[in-house]
Length: 144
Length: 144
Image 1 (cartoon, rainbow over the protein chains, first blue to last red):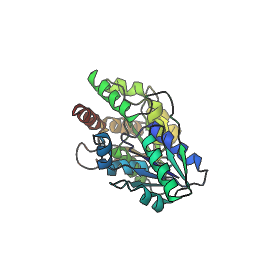
Image 2 (cartoon, rainbow over the protein chains, first blue to last red; image 1 turned 90 degrees about the horizontal axis):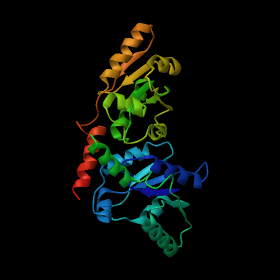
Image 3 (cartoon, chains in turn orange, cyan; image 1 turned 180 degrees about the vertical axis):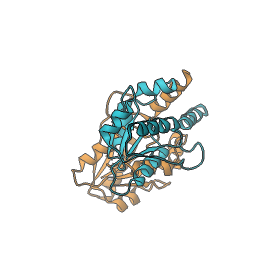
Image 4 (cartoon, rainbow over the protein chains, first blue to last red; image 1 turned 30 degrees about the vertical axis):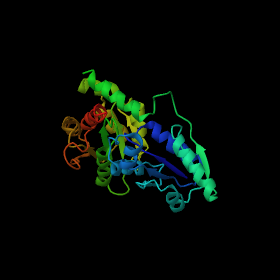
């Protein structure tokens, strides 16, 4: 099982996504998580994560449900990552459509035997979004 | 082993504190973590955590290093918690002097055989503080 993400300000939505990803592979599956590099996030979103990549990776690796957490490659070498981690399934989050189409395209092109599974969103909208969480931090702080 | 805290916006400083707490008890020790209730935090700090208590508890419980995570009692029934979890050691963080003196006083008064161990701060100042983390979220968001 392979899942990817930024995991900035780790929250319950991240945990649910990882738990569900693990579940898709059955009880004995191994869950490998690729944590996006700061530079990759900056290039894609125009801003860096609040938490540096090493700390994001280590916190994800500390979760019981995660067997291994790696930093992504700065140039997003998807094929390299797929060949290195050899997953049966790649899990993508409800908000990872770009990653989903990239991975799907690559798998077809290379003729790899990997399934891509979309994990649904958990809880109400806003419950498990890092952006929303950041907005809530600002709101909570500004009210005092 | 018993450790307590708020664990709002879980970060690497929290993880280090819990890992070090577990280490103090040896490899086969069990680490029980009491996660402070929203109301308790509000009463002590004048503001509520950003993340609700159930979510804070569940995320702490999902860490490999944690054997069990419980919500505190709203009225901070320390003696009840000590009798229920029966720890050999209570670990307190570098910024938990109030909890340390409270627990130490109670242990002496009740004649309990429990050690209180202070866990040092990890990394540079500000590295592992939730307040600092919140300030960084605000700074990161205001710069765009």
